[in-house]
Each structure stands twice: as structure tokens, then as C-alpha cells.
Image (cartoon, rainbow, N blue to C red; front, side):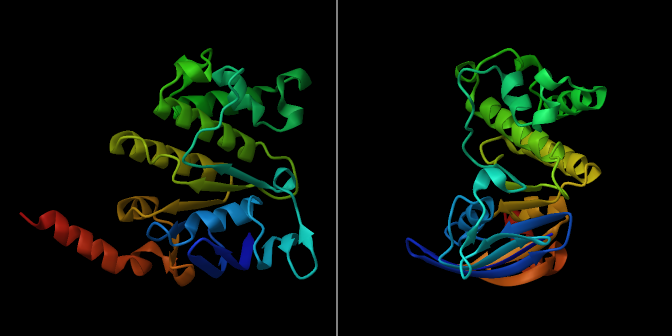
Length: 247
């Protein structure tokens, strides 16, 4: 689905990362400052790596050697980050459907299936009752859920060749654990059903095991290991369990 081999210097981080996504959901796991967000921003097109390449299927998104750089809006990639960026002049519902493929917009005449998609995603993120509100009327957590819902709708209605890649940069970090866990479970089921691949960032061991996904462990800008979560994060899980058992 995606092959990354890039080098990039940002601040004190010297990123040198190579990996390939082969599973429906992959977690990029590592401590703060390890380069996780920079990797996602490079895939999305918000960062031009100093060297290397990024390919999605047969499509070249970045190749510094040949000068290829596909701009963000032309990439089959959808992103949800920690900060909500909503259109202030639009309602919640308008923000969500803005992410839909152009042929699925209201002016093009929405089909029943397209209406169901929006209803399903708004229900999943518990924002149905907020549909007519504008961003200034929302709490921080509500704004964040709307932002992620818009990205998800855009990803699953993507009309290009193949599927759009969903990038999640800890978009639920500001929510309480109960809601976060429920949203993650629902989102995983939804995106798998729509065959939308995901690369998500976390430094939370529990969340990585909850997803049961492939894990790419990164530290100080380097990929240390890739594989099933039970293998890659076995030691971290053991330490966490020991900490919880301490009186």
C-alpha cells in the first residue's frame, strides 16, 4: 500500500526511516520527539523530505532524486491530527460533507448510500445533535470529533484508483479514556469494512494493543522494529502491567 524511505532533518531530530505498510491498520509507536509526526506530515505532503522517496502502490508521491513531489491536495491521503481545523462559517454537517468526493456533494445529488455514510459517521462520532451548530459553539472535544469525522468521510468516499490512506496523528488525545476507546473500536470496524488502510500514531501501549494492529516502533528518528503488536511491544506491555500491580 505504501513504501517510505526518507531522510529529513527537523530541529534536533535526524529522521532516517524506511518501512512498508502491508496491513489494514498500522501503528507508528514511539516516545514524544521520535519523529512520528514528521513521518506522517511527509506522507501527507506537508513536509518535503531532504532525500528519499514515498510510493503509494505504483504511484510516486515523492522522489527527491528525480524531483517528483505530488502536492497534498492531489494525494490519495486523508489526515486527522490533534488540532481541529474546521471552517468557521460552516455548520458541523457542512464541515463533515465538505470532505466527500465532489460527485457525492449535495449539488451533485447524493445517493442513498452516500447519505448513509454521513449518517453512520456522524453517529459513530456522536455529533448528530451538533449538526446545525457552528465551530464557535463547540467544545474542544466536539470540534475534534467533527474534524476526524470529516477526514473519515473523505477517505471512504475517495474516487481515485485504489483506496485513500487514512493518517491519524493522535486525534483523540484530548478525550477521556472511555470515549476514546469506544471511538477507536468503532472507527477500526468502520474503516476495515470500507477497506480504508490506516497509519496511526500513538505512544500509548494500551491503545496499540486495543487495535491489535501491525506496529512500527520508532525512536530517535529510526525504525527499530516492525511486526505484530504482541511481538514488538511485549516488553512495554510487561512493564505496564507490573506498574499497575504495584501498591
